[in-house]
Length: 170
Image 1 (cartoon, rainbow, N blue to C red):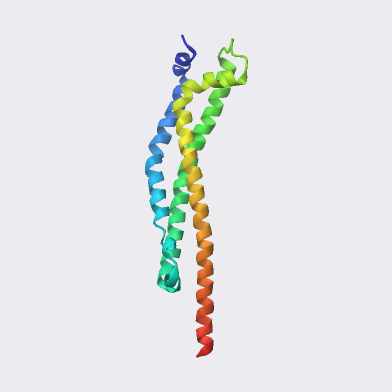
Image 2: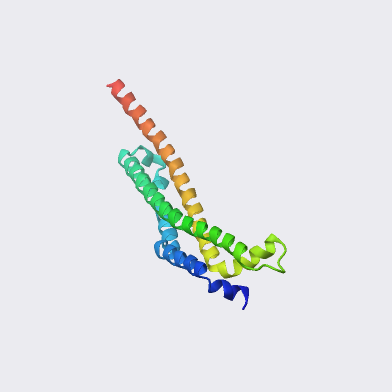
């Protein structure tokens, strides 16, 4: 029996596949990616330029939206991180198990053994890579929202200064 077939009949491999199924049911990468792009591209802060910067209402709406969007992105990221960590741990444990319990005669280098192990684990590794990319994208969006928040904070400070200078003139 080939190595891949032998691995695929192993109960630990089947358990790892079950972890993959659960993760895939809890993480919809395409939906989460689309939601994140929609939130990020629809930020009101992008429309704050010119005279709109002086509209207190628009600045408040942009600030509230930044907070809500950041919160939702963190929620998506947390869920993805939690479930993908189980797969990372499962893959690591399964690799150790295979290296200890299967015959790798004829495969001398670590790269050869890893390549052999990667074949039956390809669907799992592909999903991990996809979710890791999603998490990286979410981190970028969260960082961008944080930076936009700093910019909005400066606008609010300018509003305060302008308001206080108006009060001083009266």
